[in-house]
Length: 185
Image (tube, rainbow, N blue to C red; front, side, top):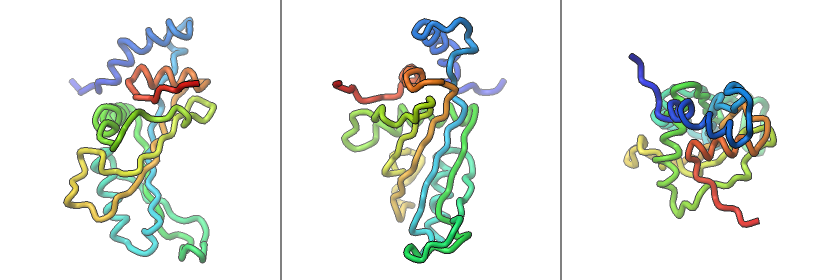
């Protein structure tokens, strides 16, 4: 028997019914769900030091459990000492079980480790039900050992859902336990 992530069972057992009640969907198939999570690390200094890319690949592999792909520059920019084809970042696309595992660790372990954390902004929605958030330090993940870090890197995390509106996506992520700031408007 294979292992089923905690958030996946939470979605099937509780979130679908709560979303049906909240948005009055007629079928469980109408309820928005997570499609994928992409994690992107742009590393501008990588043009000068190859070791930074190797460390970023190692760290992102530890965080996600999946080997990232390197991103190459599409065109040369002389002001940044950048040539076409140079590696300037790494990215990972997570789906299914790894996606739910990562989201669970991100919500319950990594975000509380952010200094002076009071919740994440609800302004990261794109209008189509997808949410993006930036993390300034990748050391908030417990898989990263402080002794092995030479440079602290940030990352962009994009959560892609099947929600048609931002309100549906916000409700979905709140049901998963995403700690959004309380807005006073």
